[in-house]
Length: 281
Image (tube, rainbow, N blue to C red):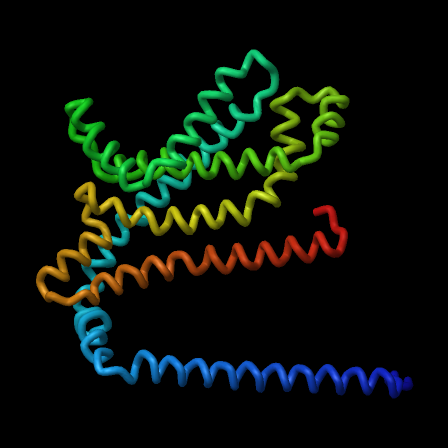
């Protein structure tokens, strides 16, 4: 059996591509070395870097504070896990109410719009204060800090997520709804079986961005008295007079966010490739 022999033109093309790849690798290595040199000259090789390193990046302090910060970080993860469920449920309800058709649902749409406008405008830290200190005072009961944190996160982020869902629903062409209704599907069936599956592809990247933001903001529940990662870092800082525990807490939040960020980038690139290739799904 004879093997295929590429033409001279194909051989030339392959050689050109290999040359471009080698050139790209060399340029990447060169730019990385230049960047490292700039960082060394402007940051590391400065008189104050030693003091900064001792104050913020001390390995001994990091190792000593890690167990306590990690225990507090588990509280943040608990709040985050509960908030993902509650935010998704409330946001889907608000988005559904905002998209209800007909004049009879005008008051409902106004209330839903007012909810999203209010909590998207309120700074999250103020919502934490109102919920964390106002609600127990009104009810005159002791409410677990985790539940207060989940409620505050839900009120704030459900307004953002609801707008993302609503925008995704509105992005689906009206002909899809009309076709579904012509087949005898009701409004709820059309939304669930036709509109939402198509809207989900458009909603996923911004929803992942909101999830990353929510991962960071759960660190603010320490102002309610929760012994989370930030509070544990503050306690360690008070004992050591060193800010390295805060850096340790920050690194834990970064490690938590990286998988979501990379997944969002991968899904966005995959969606772009499918759209460019003309694929429907």
